[in-house]
Structures are given as structure tokens and as C-alpha cells.
View 1 (cartoon, rainbow, N blue to C red):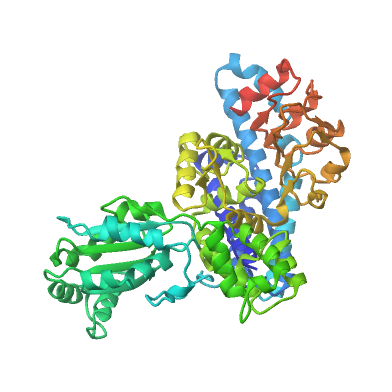
View 2 (view 1 turned 180 degrees about the vertical axis):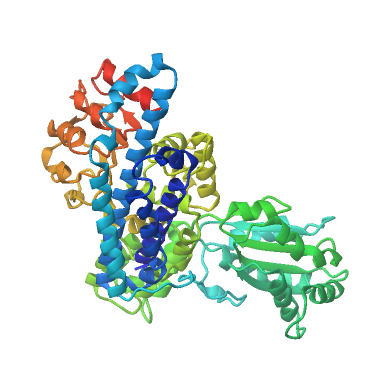
Length: 621
């Protein structure tokens, strides 16, 4: 599964964040002088590094090797526990700092938090236990013959070309005409760069191919060149590819200077059209270097760029980007039917037509997904096989390297922020401020950065995920955002068994295991005890997020929830009990939740916060 590979990438990201945190000045200043300085704590980082170097090999092997997959799962669990340990040290660092600050403010807080001092409660034994597990995993890597290897891209896409069977394209004539008439035909006094922007699989390359092969375009522009740029943006290679597409031989070993001079001469006063497909690179200086020879062409020349990243578009564009939208259901069905029904027609199989229309709706307008799933069912007329695809709880996204590529090349902190969104149900509309607050509470943003405004950092991360098409503005509520179903599936696949969604009414999702770290609960009128069975075993739970019901009335939750959360889930960072009408008081033991950063009691029956909670909030913020 693609999820196995990108799940390993998520683990690499988590390790990198831990390395950054352990290297921070606040962390180092605090442990300096402690008895742990020359002992157990100093062994933690090299132990983690020794498994990090073999993760690339493990990521690729776990797809077909369940033993390696189990090894990675155990490593994830150990890393989560190590993160909890570092958070305990961070809490102690806060206590120490508060004691040295204004005594009037810190006296009450210091008395409160002194009981949380991990150094008084067996820090050595906790370190020994975690190090023991990690060292065991280090030994197992040798038994499993895991090797150090240079990180390579396991999702490399095949190069694209300008060739296209237009009979297999549906619903894009309007987009083609809009770009040709608005951007290509008008005479301008500059060489325009037109970005086509959209999420992975939406059909950017197909639209560019339609434009490239249009007879009017071929009559208006000469030369017309197609170059697949993809991940490695190299001015020398792209320049060479352009010249070769124009019919010129390029000798091996030619310099960039030589090739660009030749290209400049060949473009002199010519009205050209270049299509640069699948551009990822976003260094402005590299784009400036590539486009130097283009300026010799006629001013009405055009360059079309396809990309999924708004940042790339903003660097290269001279006109506003063309945002490619998803296909309507009718066009998606036409596309599906063409690929699924061979030597027959949907009208001859009405039972399959009904199932197929359901599959198409699940694709949510992504042509790449429609074609891939139609291909799986091609020439198959067995309704059971079609139903298996329709009712699958998690579609296998391995068919689409475009989606996994989008995740694989995210920076470490963005990987963690994105995967956290797997906690949201499909089609859930979330607000920007809400998600940023959750990221801050879970410490997913800053790593080792100091003196950073977390809200500003969260805003940058959110906008970055929008620009990469992971989030989309809701069409129903412009103040909210959503994830496409396949993007949601990708997040869930990466998250694995450490994230859990308790879907309202779906008892198949009511399975809480001891490995769960993040849990969301889709609220019902009555959230019964059975729904939360197993919660007491999830001692490492970090998130309990209530997804509020749309009902105007209060909901009610089983009384045991407070005991299981407050008494047994000591690692909670996020606790949301919103809209539960039967919650009227908080137990005093909530003060034991020393990691708690986010508490939502809105629309409950609680009228007043207890004093001990006020002290707790001062400590954490």
C-alpha cells in the first residue's frame, strides 16, 4: 500500500522533530547540570539516529514484509512514548523557569506543578524503559537485515508527453476554450506565463495536452514545445529538452551557456508556445536562469506551466493562475463508463450502472481516480467485485503516485500537521483558527524554534497546505475548509492505527486499542458507554476531540468518560467535551493532566471554572 511507504515518511518526520527539540537551547540549558546529562538522556538521540538511518529501507520493504511492518509500528509506539518523556522534561523546565521569575505570580503555580516534577517520580526508570525498547528495536534491525540507504523517491512518476486520445477526455472543453481565448490569442507586449493549478489527479496535464494539440494553437504558434519538468528542476536539462523538442541535436557535455545561446538564437522573433508540465521547484533564481533565452522570442509568445503548488505559480506567473476544478458527476460517469465497459454498454447492465454511479460519486470529480477504478473493473461484470470497490472503507491509493508524491515531499512539520487532520471525518468543514489551535496544542509546528509566534507559524503552515491543494475552501461556507475524500483517505492511511475516529452510528469504527494516541468522537444525541469501550486501555491518548453534532439540542455522554479520560489518560494535550449537557463539574484530578494545552467546555452545563484549573492554565500559557 502507498500508506505503508508514506507512513514510514511520517515516522522519519517525527524523529526529525524530536532531534530538533532535543537540540533546542531551552532543552539543553535545562538538562545541563542534571545527573542525566552524562547518562541515559544522552543515549536517547544516538539510539534514535541508529534506527532513522534504516527507515528508507524499512519503508520500502514493509509493503510485502509483515515482520518489517510490525517493527515500524513498534518503533512508532516507542517514539510517541519518547515524545511524552520529552514533554515531561519540558514541563519541568517551565517549573524551574517560573521559580526564578516573579515570586508573587509563580508561588501558587510552583506549588501546583511541583507535584508534576518528573525528576521526583522516577525519570531514570522511564528513560531506561524507553531506551530498552528502542535498543531492542535497534538489535532487530540487524536481524531483519535493514540497511542504510540514500533516500530515493519511491513514487517517481513516469514522464508525460503531448500525445492524447481526445475521445477519452470528458468535461474539459470549456476549460480549454477559456485558456485559449483569454490567455493565448490576445496580443500582449510581454511573454506571458500562464499557470494551470489544481490538486493531484484533477487533470492539469490532460488540459495542457488538449491545448497543445488544438489545430488553432498549432497555426498560431511555432515552435510548440512540450517538456515534462517533474521533480528535478535543472536549467541545463530543461534547456536541452526544449532544443531537442525543436529538432536540434545537443551534444553530450554541452554547457548551459552554449545551449542557452543556441536557444536564444533559434527563438529570435518567433511566436513560441512552451508547455512545462508538472513543475514542483519553487526557487525564483532558478526560474530566472531558465527563462533568460526566452526573451528573444516574439512578445506574444506564451508559456503554460502545470503545477499543484500555488507557490510555484506565484513565482512564475505573469497573469492570474487558471484554477482547474473537479469534473461534474455527469462527465465523471462518461469517463468511468468508457473505461469500465468494453464491448458492451451500461444500459445492458443496469445493476452495474447503479453501483458504478456510486463509485463515481466517491471519486469526487478526480479524473485520475475515476480512470484508475474503472480500470480495476474493466471487463469485469461481477456485481460482487463492483460492490467490493464501492463499499471499501479505505480505498487503496497506491494507484496514484501523484497523491503520495504530494505528501512525500512535504517538510517534516507539514507532514505531521497534515496527518493530524486524519482525525476529522470525511466532508468535515473546519475553520482555520480551530485547526491552528489544535496544531499548537499538539506541538506540531515549531520544533526547536524559539521566540516564535505559534499562531503566525500555524497560519503559514495552513496557507502552505492550501497552496499545495491539501485543503480546499468549502463551497457551502467560505469561512470553512474541507479535504477531498482521496486526500482524507491519504491522511488516514498514513496515520494508521494511532489515530481513531468514532463515527456517529457506525459501530464498525467503535474500536479503541491501547495504541491509539489521537481520537475524535462524532457526537450523537446519546454517546453510550459501549462507544468508548477500550478507552481506559489507551493510556497514551493525546487527543479527545468532540466533533459537535448539528442538532440544536444538547448531547449526553456516559458518565465513565470523565474517569477514563481524566484519571487514566495522563498524556492528554487536547480535551474537547463541547455540547455535552450532562457535564456540569470538572473532577479535581483534571489537574493531573500536565500536558493539557487545549480544553473546550463550550455549551456544557459548567458555569464556573475551579480555582485549581486557573492555576493550571497560567502554568501552561
